[in-house]
Amino acid sequence: MVAEQKVFKMKGEMNKRTDEKILNYINGELCAPLSKLYLENYNPALGEVYSYLPDSDERDVEQAVEAAKKAFPIWSGYSIEERSNILMRLASLIEENLEFLAEVESIDNGKPIALARKVDIPRASANFKFFATAILHASSESHATNSQTLNYTLRQPIGVVGCISPWNLPLYLFSWKIAPALAAGNTVVAKPSEITPMSAYILSKLAVEAGFPAGVLNIVHGEGPKVGASIVEHLNVKAISFTGGTQTGATIAKIAAPMFKKLSLELGGKNPNIIFENCDFEKAVATSVRSSFSNQGQICLCGSRIFVQQSIYNHFKQAFKERCSLLKIGDPILEETQMGALVSKAHFEKVLSYIDLAKQEGGTILYGGKPVKVSGRCANGWFVEPTIIENLAYDCRTNQEEIFGPVVTLTPFENEEEVLAMANSTQYGLSATIWTKNLNKAHRIAQKIDAGIVWINCWLIRDLRTPFGGIKNSGVGREGGWEALRFFTEPKNVCIETND
Ligand code: NAD
Image (cartoon, rainbow, N blue to C red; front, side, top):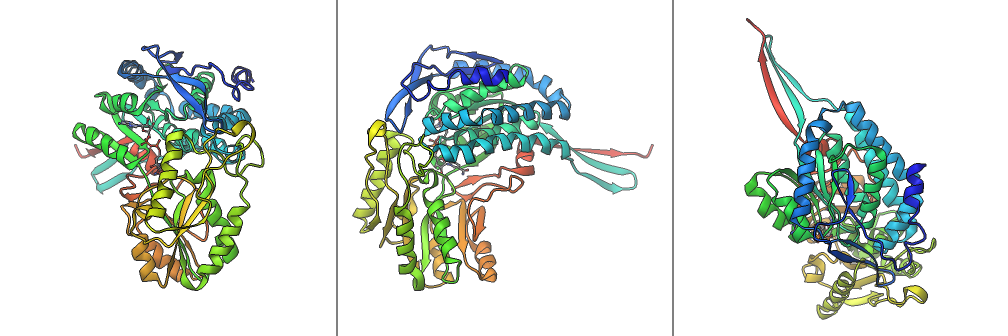
């Protein structure tokens, strides 16, 4: 209740232009950046600044790493139950503040509040709960080599770890890294995206309420090449868990690899959504609308390349177009809105430039293709219509490069072999969706497709125990379940001989 009062005092101010200044969270304190400089934070649905975030630099990172280093022996020395209890308290505080956090996320990111309420915030709480309880059940291996010799494996926390996250699912992905890192006994220096910093700031207030010892969790706000790079470069940060663009992942790898840091990279995607003639047609159409345009297509798992078997191509095209025309685009803070604003002006322009490129490449815009002028207070917001394009070669730039917006292409195919070749033709390999009632075929394709995650006759069903991540240029390593706890611990083999 105390937390609720403290946090809720900002409610109502969020929707207006305010001078709210976000603070860093270092060594248990909410503090201004040492530079005293701030960056503008936009409400994308209004297209205007509504708050400010710290323009931190390497000095703030230095303080955060120092605090985390000092806190490491304390936190890693806590019993598993003590660590679990604090993480569970944080999960409960997120739940208690669900409505407020959903509003925060919607305003900061432009996403429909209904989505933030149903997906983003419950998942952030679930992330903490999942890892808080996972550590209660974790065990490590032992190997009885012979009657006198036993090997056992210790799983020890690494030390100070860095967690860097993107803007599309701000609190959802931020907590997806922080939760396992802390649960495993590490201390954390984390950086949320400078484009959507607000929910991480609220999280730091909730962490104070939850009773984390000073320095266990540190959140430093600011730009990637400044704050993010300082975290990656710091000698005392022993592992980096990063989610973001492939290019940024490559930059991080270049710095971290010669320092022999542990690296987990969750990167971009260009996911195929494959629809065979013998699918459950209604379900395939309805789910494809969601997998194309949820969160304005700004989910790394969205299926942006839809391949439809030739015999049902025209039927699918009509039904899909009709469904898309029913999507309600508008003010994200309204309950009924299904598509909100794109996250920033730069991203809005990038998405529109890809629609232009598709036209230059000979594509036909079947539906959408233009910015949306929302009336009223959102008149200057960055909205784009759900856009469907056809008649493009599978290997053109529009079909090969990540757009990360409400833009999908439709491509017909004749048979399994052809669609597999097209689906596997990109540099990416994050996820894939397959629609068919023939399970033999589904299994065959699942085996052969270049993806770390395959959904058959469904999309975005997430079991937090499963390995999450991509192959090829979509990433290195896996998050989720034991994979995450393995990443955030160092295995140590101990061999003991018992004969005197
Ligand atoms: P981004 O790479 O621009 O930024 C991600 C984070 O990295 C931000 O916090 C940013 O400040 C930071 N950063 C930027 N430059 C850095 C540097 N030189 N050193 C250290 N940190 C730096 O990505 P984005 O635009 O925020 O997010 C969109 C991308 O994220 C898309 O490509 C999308 O596919 C990907 N993504 C992947 C997954 C996944 O699980 N694979 C999930 C969500 C988003």
